Image 1 (cartoon, chains in turn yellow, red):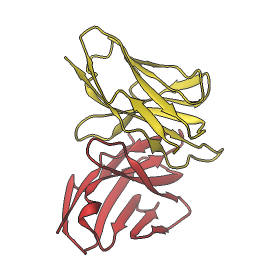
Image 2 (cartoon, each protein chain N blue to C red):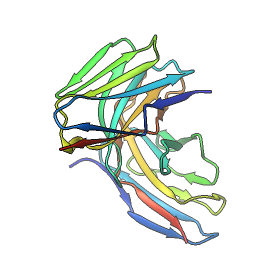
Image 3 (cartoon, one colour):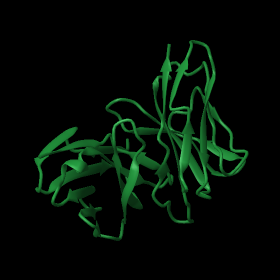
Image 4 (cartoon, rainbow over the protein chains, first blue to last red):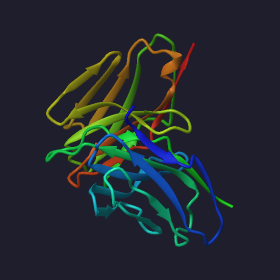
Length: 115
Length: 111
């Protein structure tokens, strides 16, 4: 079955540590996205990528980094510069046309906690 | 600034009734609007997309309307069931091409 796989499901980070969240899709989608969700809030866009080797900052990119070396993969690194990283992180992908995107397919999320 | 508001954080209805959820937006000229369902601890699941030149879209028990004059979308679930209990998110694509999400409405269907 096609879909998006995020790993790990739960992740604990110590102060000052960088951690990387994995996101893999086998849907052959061009575009991939990372969102952050905090309790009672909507999803906020961190980074997105429309094609391999290209990505753009979203609304809250500070303290995060990404890479897009393969179409299938879009890992997110939460750096020590991110002051409040505890949140639920969601990866998504979509087909893009010249006019608009189709519905996004989301992974099951990674819950990151700072200890 | 651009803003998306979904009516009340929580909505309780009786099984069999129609649930109506509201999404209002300001300072947007969206090309289209999407609705998603999210269960606790899971990623959102895409339900419906409606374009700016469409007034209404239906899928099984779901119906979405889109009024660009009122800057509002209504999401209806007819003959609601306890299994419909979840958080429903609306999302808009604006000129920047990125989807922006509302904070969601938590729907509980009581048996």
